[in-house]
Length: 94
Length: 92
Image (cartoon, each protein chain N blue to C red):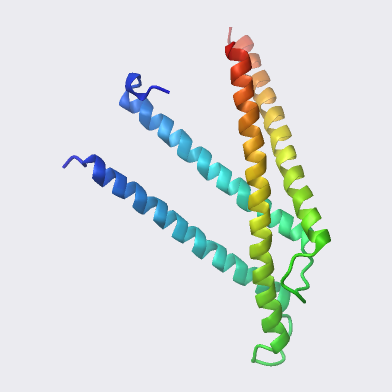
């Protein structure tokens, strides 16, 4: 059966949502691994120590803040690159 | 761009290329974030705020990473173009 345009649009939406969800899961796992590696190095007891927990939570919060900053800078660079490309097109077009 | 003049097969190709580009950009972004985290944030997490020095480091790291990315891209295209010309000369 041929798909109607609406169905294709829904498929696309689903695909985007799935991608966002899988990206989230991936970054969750990476964050856990990273903060565990950096914060937990003592295995003489089974319990998570208070400082280990604090360190891990700080690690996560800091990473998110860093990600925010990187994303801001990245967007700025992309905007400048787009403007330059547009200027080039205008220049060669005339 | 006027899509009505392009054949469906070409339209699919263009869409695939766009998807590949988006994928490539998000891969670039993830790699850059990881590298700059490794280089700028020392693995001591006594607090959750970014320090001033860390912020400056991140800004510079992003700028430099994208600069290097562009430079390598330019060189890579130049080299592959040179290669192609050489191949053409060899075959003719």
